[in-house]
Length: 161
Image (spheres, rainbow, N blue to C red):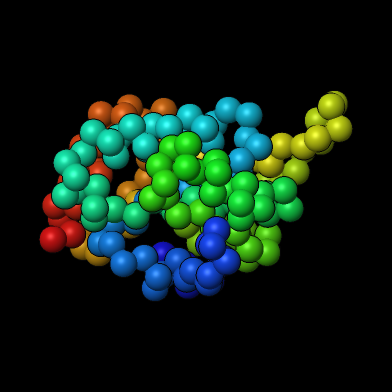
């Protein structure tokens, strides 16, 4: 996990490496204006989490880091994440810091792509990166079935005990 400090949706500092208190952390980089992939990935993670036993859910922290800090305010990130799970942590910060953290975990942030409408999209890879105290790092791509995610999440929790 990168030694990077960002800001959570309550305005408090959040260090990716030291702040999470749960044994399993799931990290996802995305943005609230994403037209398709981010919503799907977060929905799949949320559904996989809901299918876990409560005791296992309590051992996992899901962290969303915006790739579009220019548009994603703390309030907007919180509102967006609450649609999936109010326990998901949302983080923002300076784009160079976010890009540095993303690069450390193998997530590519390409930057802005202008749209004919005048808006823009932010190109980024969309894998979920899982960290566990005892099991190292696991990656899930956007096409990973929900049942497989649930299985893997439970296995990470089991191995972190």
